[in-house]
Length: 478
Ligand code: 6PG
Image (cartoon, rainbow, N blue to C red; front, side):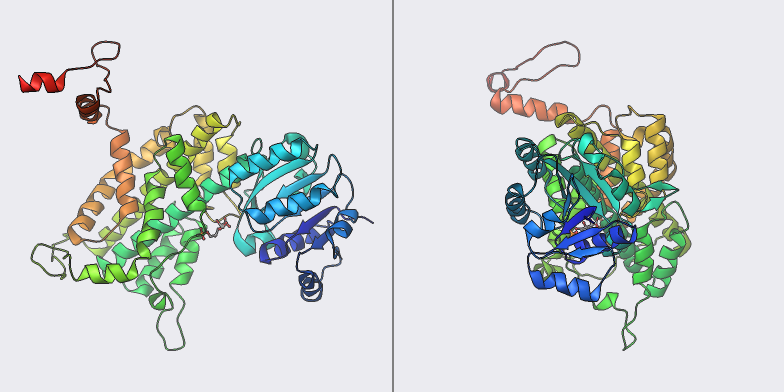
């Protein structure tokens, strides 16, 4: 009997997805460019629903029609190379699915290229790491609805379930699935950075030890902050090495990245969307890698004007419990802003690429399986249902109320971090965004005057329609 679906690329993600499909009763053909890997998988992870194949031809032949071919290879060139090889073997109507972290513009290009040959292409964002792939990831499929029909059942079966619903929902045309996954990763960066900043404050200002911080995160995970990233953070603070030291304390403070956070930021720049919290998170990773420079700088630029790096001995005028509350509320508000920025980018992309995005449903996908899964995504989903045309998530009734309730705490906390010299650029960006957004009369009038002064770029007026220029230089010299 032919297989229902085939998976090419048997690294951990590909293999786990194949196992997940096989567990769900689908017959799965497996293939890998390095043939020995196929045998290794059959030996070490044998599944009765697996069919091993040793050439692309054999692989394609083993599939029922229309063929569903799931690529789980490294994004970039390997995907194009594989598509080129497949084109000569597959038939019209077959469906090639790219489940990697591909750049959405590549997905648009590949969709159009394959369309000319009447081959369907789906660009599918998948989140959840190894564990998610094996037992239920969040899935974000983009492509034609027509082609999606052929994989819908499989995808829904293998996906995570949250609140009784599958965390796989059709997104929109061509690159939209990979786009949503890209924004997911941008938000992931922000979430992680904000949590790290909370840790820095609790440790460096609150003086909490690792055990105490562990308890705080555990506690927060029972609140509106409940999420996968808070949960794993609490777990990280439990791990000790053989010598009794905490593993976390022995890990180098340099964070790397594979590029999706960078793509999110480049895209936001292209579309002119402020995603400052996500940008701060990316910049923080860049800065983290300047370990040697930072170590030097610590002895050159002092934390305070007295000329040393001792604590400023500022009277916090609050007990630890109060500080923890401020950090919690600040984290929550900053988190809301980062998600709002992510959705704002999606809104701009929807317009730019003529997609049809359902923000409430996208929030629902994120509720399970993926890295940013969090309880408050229910509130985001509900808010987008109640106010589907809202300009910004932070303007919805629910979230504006949440922000108004905790904003004072964010201000108080940031005034302390500023005084204490503890860097919290993502939280600061969140407050900057809120204040910028809620200021109806900004200082951009001065920018316009300056532009007109040196470049005659003209300006608009508040009191009259039209475009104006003033002879600044001439009149100034008079
Ligand atoms: C996911 C993750 C995943 C991501 C890595 C690390 O949703 O499963 O987002 O896709 O690639 O977790 O990403 P960075 O190396 O960029 O931190």
